[in-house]
Length: 470
Image (cartoon, rainbow, N blue to C red; front, side, top):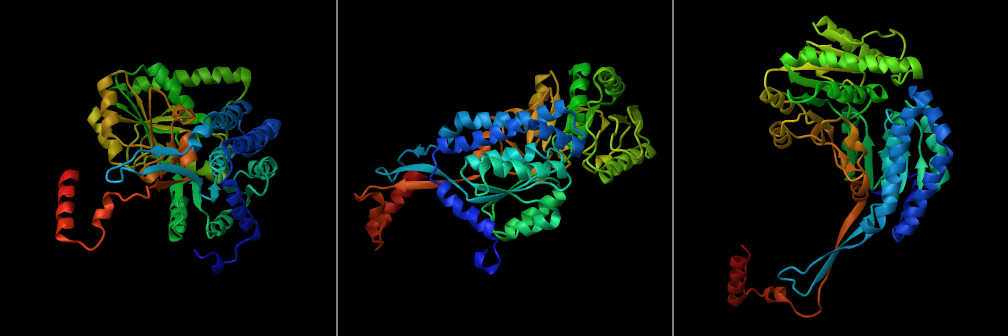
């Protein structure tokens, strides 16, 4: 895109100019910027909890664990490692350039756009921001209009912490997002659904802007006969209904041997009973659905499944008008039902019976590649087969969701579940340009023997070199 072809806002040009100065910063300057961000968030924790309660009815403990703690952990990780990541990475001489030296230099890409979702509206706006700023970029953050309280708070806190010359928060709906995608950003990171992800990818590709897509999809759980069912049910129950089921890497459906379905359903009833007993003492720990349209869609998925012959094993007592939907487990689910064709993104877990491990592998491989894959098994041969014969953005063995919390593991999808990754060093590299730098000697080297004219002697020498190099 030629910047002169369209009207570029003055604030965007200011951000672009700022990137020139930030490119020369050392790690201490960038870490100080991150620590100012940490300080502002620490001082505003109560406001963050209040905003997330307003938008999602999120319990304070869940906000601490899923929105604030990951941000603090990421800043701490960057503080400890950024100085190493920013160093030039030296490479040795290579034949035929034996007198050369080279290195890889990590430069900021420039001004980047972060489009955040509504399901974790604080964490998924701030986590990529940390990586982008640590890499030396200026940033435009577009929060979701469906989480207005959190978006308004981000618009207040982020410029306060980092300065409007480093980060600008732009509020608004889809039309505002479309306008932003017309600006010549140096990178775009989008977190959200596949439909909008395709729009973002097309808009960025049209202007040759590199992009990262963090999408979702139907993340399967496979439970092997060797897995302990009680602990498996407790873990899946927690992971599925964390954030009201509105998590991109939440378990979407479960595959298990048909003979074990009744036992698995009973294990879920035990897990649900323990949660309900605790809630009688401490109050509800379930996050509500984001808005009425989303809650109605989840109700329709349940009604469609029950009408098609699915059996209600756990939950299902739902307020038909409200946003609080009880965790629900279904058995007797078939691939033709809507909830097996769409990403559920809510508190329903379908259990699908299979006859053999091969059937489960075939079932997963026949569908778009998921963002996460969860395997519960104590049999190492079963684990080995899933590791070698499946593809997913991430894989977690004998647990769910927790892989996203490890600072040295990337968050990213594959195929329909996304492209690119971030978190920790992977985020630093996503928002950096790895520039190749080669320094050669002034002395003649082997390549000078092949300068024109191509004499018979040079042709013979080139053929010998080809034999040597092949």
